[in-house]
Image 1 (spheres, one colour):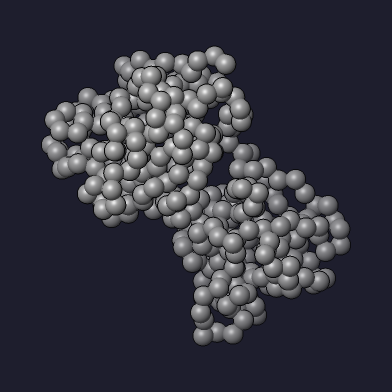
Image 2 (image 1 turned 90 degrees about the vertical axis):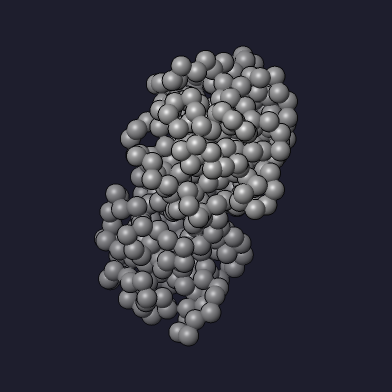
Length: 365
């Protein structure tokens, strides 16, 4: 069964055609139980994104990309929970998957096995919805990892396509490591001098931030803007903030050829679980815009500069508070205005509102 890297699926159990793989609760949360629930394409807890990273396959939560379908290996007072139960957790070796043919070879279904354990197949107790607490192999509606060979179709899954993989630049599209504008829709709602951004852009350590509102429909992705980036810092107290940097020098419109660092604020909690030290390649979705920190709507607050994350403690990653309680990004190099940092690829980014900023298009190959 061929799956699209980055596409969203609902996993329907063959033994219970009315129910699908579900993260228990109203939204995916770290360590939450995985069980069966009445099938619903619009239920965020039933939306699983298929990912291939460094040759390893995962299903991550659409509502929390930092969480993956995983084997529980913690401690439990209940028998047949540890090393059996399916839950969601930051991607690791116990999240890597192998897709195998269905129990009877039916091409419309597949079995899902752990990559590092040939005796652990994703298995469901059909017939009822699961719960948050019923985590053992006998719990009604529960999903767990069990030895193969069952013939009741409880280990067979139909992968129902919910959403195609996001469009991405093709690898090798650029002949240099250009830094490209990171969203598919440019809809800048605040430029570096608008309102409280002016406090960030003046005085000590100006960082010239923009607010990017994207499509204004749902929550859009921030895409890796160069050949490879690594997340260097994630902060969750106060306003959620992510720092990440390129693993090699990039080319910017300013003529700079150096490593680049970017700071993004406001992603929601579900977007940043398991992100620290995670690597992304060009065009790969990294996280979605959010409204953490009390902005009025979903957006990215973006600042960029040369060099690396500056230090370890939170206070070393930026400077402030400045006027209007604003903070400025402080990389080890120098901060760049948005038009100095990012080229625009018109094949990737549709421009809705530049807010008066004159961006350069990426040079022709």
